[in-house]
Length: 214
Image (cartoon, rainbow, N blue to C red):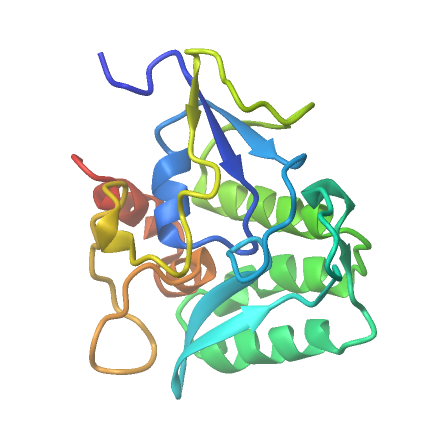
């Protein structure tokens, strides 16, 4: 019996999550996205990493945050900055010549054209899209309250996947090489959009091969 059998995963909601995030999701049929936690800056909640011509590029969604403790569900996107145009141009530049760009471009462009007010809505739409393109069927729900003490039926991975700590310090993800567009050296754990654009329908196989213990 696996550790995940019969359990639900509780995890924070990332922006265009990395491959490691999806190796975690793949082990659970039910995923609860934590939206009542306080927003934490400099995390994957509003940033991702893609592979471009000049190396790894960080994409950050600007938010209206300030110094107060604000629940994730209430974090608004700062649309005074031209981040949507900049992110989309970066994605086009990085993956315009990738094997599967023409098959997926319209799906992603449609999301970026929408001016979502809240970060959770943007992240949720992108997560749902990526799961669909991967062919991963999951029951995805939002948390109803913030719980410090969880029932035995939950696996708590909130704030565990963090950009300041290398994925090799965790046990969820074992990098499996695939052909990236730029550079001679493979860079692991990029945003899932990197894998999708490079591998297309084979992406889910890479995710499952990357799951620790697979």
